[in-house]
Image 1 (cartoon, rainbow, N blue to C red):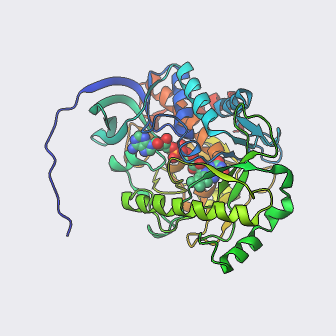
Image 2: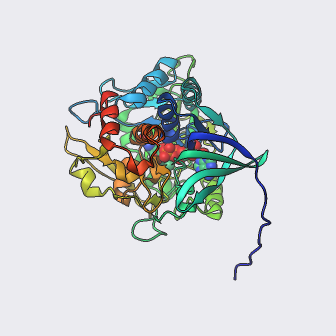
Image 3: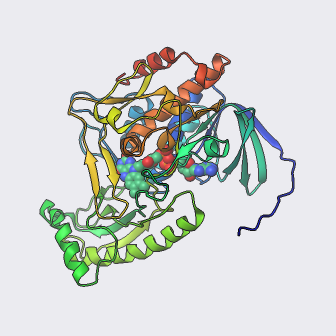
Length: 441
Ligand SMILES: Cc1cc2nc3c(=O)[nH]c(=O)nc-3n(C[C@H](O)[C@H](O)[C@H](O)COP(=O)(O)OP(=O)(O)OC[C@H]3O[C@@H](n4cnc5c(N)ncnc54)[C@H](O)[C@@H]3O)c2cc1C
């Protein structure tokens, strides 16, 4: 039986009143903060770490997918501007000008995102864990943070939940789904790794094609203990200012895998960090022994936290489905274009499956997916939006999470200007603003 302790009631200082408060500074959150501040709303961005970027930086997931649907570039606006700023800063390597797909240096992402947020006039508060929403009559009116300064309260006319896990909406009472039909069936989690001293001149596509064979061989020799039969992704990372030396380069690997982890359970998260770190050692030994070009590689760095592919999906006024994504459905209130394949990793760890849209087509995400059912004053953005678990396989990628951020940031600023709830804004105005910014809607 669980034992309970009743916390004492306490008085919390009100540290600020804002038009818009963005909770979580990952890819969706920092773009939302820029969009809201540029639109003239007094905006506060609260983040638990001391830097922005979320899974892209703390999780070191350094690979942006394509924003080209096979026919046209579908994402414009702040996302497009950010990708180019990152490249101009020297912190990203554009694989292909047409698709804009790129591998980036996480340090550069931290810097470029931070400066763009500040230039937009947004206030940042780092090192603050948002622990409670302030809710009155089903309207979210603010948040309480816990930090070295103790507890602090912040009020906002609109609260945007971009925590990835939907922490704020869930605590405010929003309904949510988790898992694949069952809450305990979830995609595995991965600790990202960057290795140094890779001899790129020795690497062949052929060797990577053979990785599955190498892994099978290593397994037989008890030299592969990671529960996956393949690498999920990998690529050369060119750090800003790095002297170009093909014989000693950096590579990232998305290859560790911990099963049965609920990213909203602190004991599961602890186990995931411990297990995945042990797997890193196995990965490095494997690379050095089996993969040409990696004979002398060393561990450069691991991510600050294990990467979480999925947790809560906050149920909104509409739930985006796999069929909506695959059939490239457009909506009257469509505000975000997406063209990325559905990528769902096998909960048993074996493999992952991609389902593709027809080339030259893209889907739209309706604004209703960002409005938690039964709650007002709040919008969700990024990974925690209202989608079924298969649709999430596409919407969770960063080049979809970022334009979602732009849509909710602008929506929040419209709600502030029009003195209404986010649910009541004229969506046609939001759509036309986004279209003018270069989104294919
Ligand atoms: C292993 C792995 C591989 C992936 N591969 C790719 C890929 O190749 N390409 C791609 O585009 N995407 C990929 N993704 C998906 C993508 O990185 C994430 O889904 C995306 O970053 C989600 O963005 P977000 O802004 O919604 O959330 P997050 O990136 O999770 O950001 C949430 C932010 O909120 C902060 N936060 C959370 N809770 C609180 C709180 N209570 N108080 C204060 N702050 C809080 C966090 O610190 C974080 O900064 C991958 C993900 C994983 C895990």
